[in-house]
Image 1 (tube, rainbow, N blue to C red):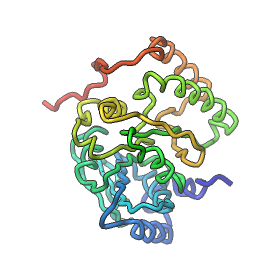
Image 2 (cartoon, rainbow, N blue to C red):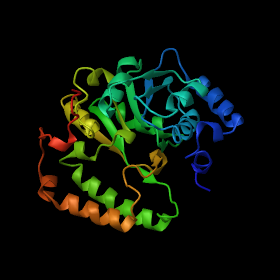
Image 3 (cartoon, rainbow, N blue to C red):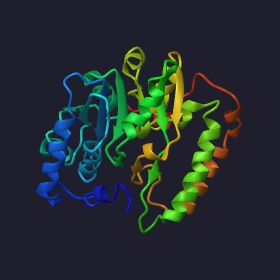
Image 4 (cartoon, rainbow, N blue to C red):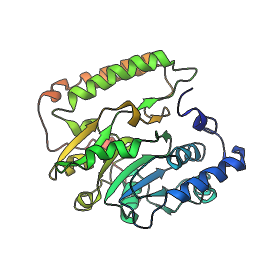
Length: 284
């Protein structure tokens, strides 16, 4: 049995389909985690995540950490019952009405008290030792931020064996790329940083995706972008980043994308041009 199987038991269910005893268990455990003087802020952003948020928070409620932490939520203008999930679980949360992951992450940073900030995506499960293992890197004096690898849970379209091969190839590529372009390897679901540094730079709110890598790039002036390679710190996520296509189709698509400008892995870069289709259009 995988460590995340019980979280999958409510993953995809609506607010009304989750048993009351599970709400009560998560609520109790989350309350016990909250510190009035946190060193670490664990911040969940959610947009239309009614069917996945409770499973994510169940995993966070079972974190095993030696540090004082707080767990906060951000509801990024959801149109479903995401906010009700936060309410049912008694989690402190904030409503961010401006739409984009950047606005949601900035909202979380604005309200967080911890010196160290962990970005959490609402469709992802986090293993019990995730925070403490990430902190082994983040506490080093020459490190500004840290990222990790992640996995997908197997389902009828994605076999465990196929996912293992897919992730091995992907992880190998990211490992090679991180020597010269570490910012391109950062993903928001597995990203933690020194909040004092982040408040001195800007989280991009004008782009649809890539605010995590952009922030990591800005943080390089304060220290390294470190990576943690530890199976016990490997979150498991759904298929928002992989899509519902077959693994083979996903693999071929990513090979095609990565082969464009593959020489980038041999040199560093301190600035990236925005693509027009990634910019958030201002409301008229």
